[in-house]
Structure formats: C-alpha cells, structure tokens
Length: 117
Image 1 (tube, rainbow, N blue to C red):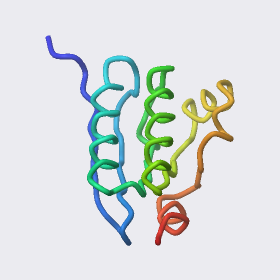
Image 2: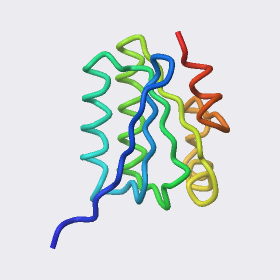
Image 3: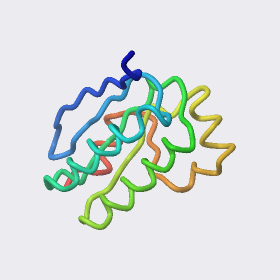
Image 4: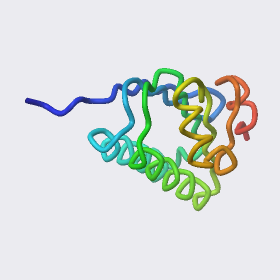
C-alpha cells in the first residue's frame, strides 16, 4: 500500500512561486514536501508563498520542514511567506509558538505583494 501523498499545486506570480498544499503535512509527507521546497530554492525560486488553507493537519515533522525551508530561502536572499494558516493548523501554530517564526499573511495576494521584488 502506498503512503498517503500530499498534493502540491505550483504557479508563479510576479517572480514569486505560490505552492498550494493539500492533505496532511506529517511524517509520511514531510520529506517529499521538504524536497520539493528545497528544489525550488536551489533553482533560484527562493521567494515562496505557501498556501496552507487545504492542510488538515501539521505535525512536528511538518513544522521542521517549514523551518528548514524558511532558513534555506533566507540563505538564498529569498523569503518564505505562509498564508491560509486557519482552523486546526492555526491552533497548532499557536500551541507550538510558531506564529512569530514565519511571515504569515491572510491571503496569497498579500503574501505575493510582500515578497514581490
């Protein structure tokens, strides 16, 4: 039986890569997700808006991937912005004290605006 996969939808707007994630960001999906974000940063697409509105759950493995991606983007003079941090995912961000670790925007458009060069 295959491990559950996370669906990622990517597009580019104003030199900012928007990644919409669907599913769960946990130990079964974090590596694939992190590898994709690392590939984007290494390809010079280090300004990334991650839309998490369709993420049902995020685990410590998911937070680890986000922190690594945030650091990697900054090292390449880019930035990671999160949007769609709502519901249960927002509650987990608050419990883990991650709200101040990331640039969190209410919408994709605001995230793109803050990252646009």
